[in-house]
Image 1: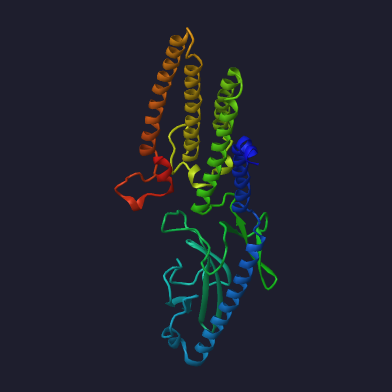
Image 2: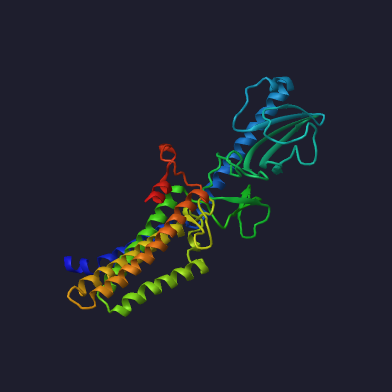
Length: 359
């Protein structure tokens, strides 16, 4: 068992990391939304019932005590409440809804209402010349987003994925009330994932590549000189094709593969590709250093020892020039073209990517 692990341990570890990557990726990017929409449907139905009960209670108070009594009641944080008298807005509990002071085509209303800052569900009851309007937020819908303005669904309605509201059912999940279509939820094709999941996916990807390279290096040491040098050339070709063909497109939703974190050039389009290039640099360095020491050892008693050592020393010198220049550009690019915190004196601002960048 021990001898088997020594012989195949590295490739087995690479396969385990790759398998874990596939399994975890599938669990993170699971596209089964039906169950989540069903939970949303139940919560939305219950909230609509509570809304109807709320506005009917307001009507009873209005009929018994008059409109002034409604204006002195305590507000309900679950619903927005507006009173229109003779088509003029005379009372409101929030400034969140961008509505006019007079009744118009969009508000007051019954059912789904799309205003400038979001989608709402409203219930309107009329008593003589007074309209009582209660509503709640379904989803915010700002024209622009930032850290304070987010186009999210209401916190009272559970929906663990990102999406938009549509008024047709094509490629969307319909929402019903009293067996009548109300609106539909259209999931976004690219779903954001938690930063911790992005970190795990990056570690699994780098782990599978690292052990694969170590396995190839160990195996190639036992092969002929021709195969020994062909393998790194093939790896270099594969790396070129992977960057040109964007083979790692499936990781683009993760933090490490976002250009906003780091992007320097066509060959360093994001931090994930940067880390892979660093692993390949270590691999190519190991390939060259091993062969230099092998040449030195095999020619210890050879008349051509001096010549071979000079050639090896020249190769190492040339490689070190290219290597040092490339490493310098890498670290310079991290500072100039990235948003990764690298100030050691600001310890608490450092994160997972700061650690990876410094090693």
